[in-house]
Image 1 (cartoon, rainbow, N blue to C red):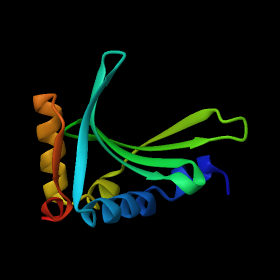
Image 2: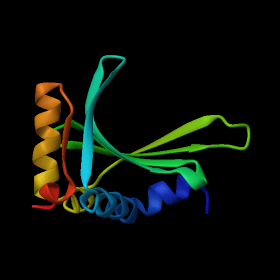
Image 3: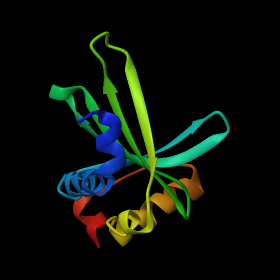
Image 4: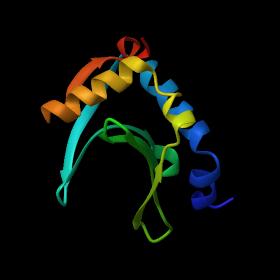
Length: 119
């Protein structure tokens, strides 16, 4: 299975994996990022031994994107973006959704206990 197929066909399981990782951490950092007139709140999970990154971006109250990044054999970074369906958005705990909306609105990152986000 290619990474493109993984992201396209298994978005929900990637979102669940990221959310589980985040809420089980002692502390989670939610960043505010800006690039080319777009801005978003983001949480990330790095899988260092596999040179991969899974992230969840919030661009607006209704626009959530799964980001899957990886390095190829030439050490070039690639990023795949997949918009979330409503069913996939429902996998994100309400506490995490609220905090990410706050980060996006305030244009300032936050650091919180992971278990706070599971509410």
